[in-house]
Amino acid sequence: MSIRCTALAGAFLATLITVAMATPAAADDALWKALRSGEHVALLRHALAPGTGDPAEFALRDCSTQRNLSDQGRGQAARIGARFRANGIAAARVASSQWCRCLETARLLDLGPVEELPPLNSFFRRGERRDAQTRALQAWLGDQALERPIVLVTHQVNITALTGIFPASGELVVLRRDSDGTLSVVGRLETE
Image 1 (spheres, rainbow, N blue to C red):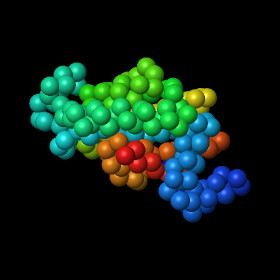
Image 2 (tube, one colour):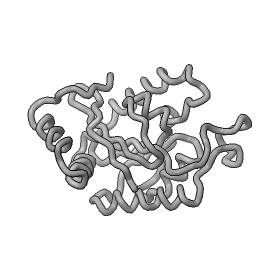
Image 3 (cartoon, rainbow, N blue to C red):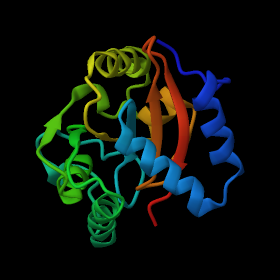
Image 4 (cartoon, rainbow, N blue to C red):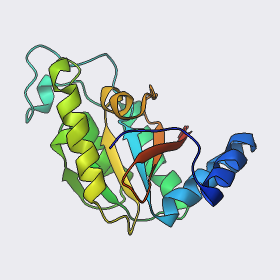
């Protein structure tokens, strides 16, 4: 599977053009509608966590060794969850990187139980994992029944590898899975 941002067939192309030409509020409404409709996935970069990368003594199951959400980040994550609910998504399938800042973001969304998904783990300091993890995430996405909204909480590097987009903390990138399994970027939602 590969990411493609080319013309899509029929009605979807018309929707995409409408979103691109719409006011920001109308474009946001169209993206929320897409997430409610199925065949779409929300990639969310974790909420605000000051710094870059993780300390050298990083340990996966020890949050004290990691870069974590600030109070502002915790508030941001809760507000993002409220924004989902305000846009008609009170529950979703939520999967997260195993990093503490992602798991905390995912839990604070309050959209449902959080599933740990290793392909969402950061490879910031392990660039050699980029391609294998991206392929694993693409395969996972290809196997999902898109019967309800899916929210994936991950890191900038993962989102950039999958989509080519460099998201801000707490930003959503909306993907569509086409009938052939191809993933297409539909748009971005700034959550604040």
